[in-house]
Length: 395
Ligand code: GLY
Image 1 (cartoon, protein in one colour):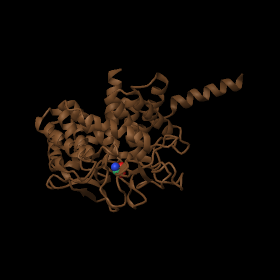
Image 2 (tube, helix red, strand yellow):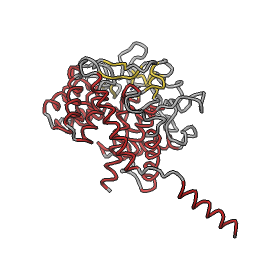
Image 3 (cartoon, protein in one colour):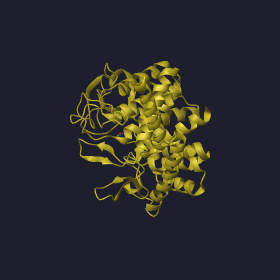
Image 4 (tube, helix red, strand yellow):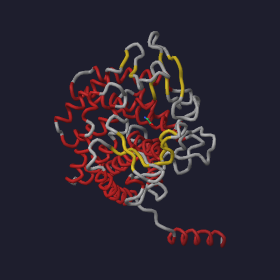
């Protein structure tokens, strides 16, 4: 009895004296406010370079940039739009407009599948928040450029134009469908949506393994339309589960379910979530290693970008599933947000090249962008904070 009393007393004292965990509400407000300050510095730093957009930093911490044709060009404009949405601050809107305008010529770019990322994060958010019809027209021209890469024989959109593969399609490409779903809703022309459905069905059929992990690259034979090869480009090897690839798949199929309400895409998203959340190599803080099969786990690099994309996707997915799953998804997203919001990942004002998050991995096996800040980690982190905030407001 005395022992029990002692245990209870110690627990009560430890609980009441221990550091209080910040509420999610307070944490989200604080990190959004700090992110606004950080992105004001970021936007100001390239204010006189209209031909450039932020990409990452070098080993000395100096900002590295991309031209508008780089696949990451739309993320900083998109983050500026999200922060404008949060604050309503006209100065942030002016920055968002300025950085978005840098991408306009890409609406004619037929050389990449990444137009969805590039234009929908920038112009898409801009159109959503302002209703500017010029933005709408740019997005529709971009959607036309993107569907020029669809081949009915393979049933999907070609990702890259390079000689290593005949017709490479990467799991990341699911993300670019959001622009096309939007284009059908906006124009009333169903051809964009039909292409999305064909691409998503082909991806379900060929990209996924029995455990619902996905390979990175599937290349098709354009004569027969059948799979030619399955490989990786950014993962550890052809049979591994590249961290961000799993994140793109989860987000992509959650979004495809939202746009179609077809339960088979919801099932796919739940299966992908199951693979990620139940994986023995997912750390307790829920930020994945750059590859779930990296050989040097637990010393392998983490990828904050994958953590942010998964958090944002899980918050959305939690709204489409039963109460038990919903709770699991939200708890995971909360853990990810708390981890990314800790000093380990969340940069001090003015540090980290003015990016918000540290510790992402672009292409480890290519020795490019390893353990650095990346624009898309910031974009999906801010999106996750806003989604979580909206969810709680709705409740
Ligand atoms: N879409 C390229 C990447 O995720 O690195």
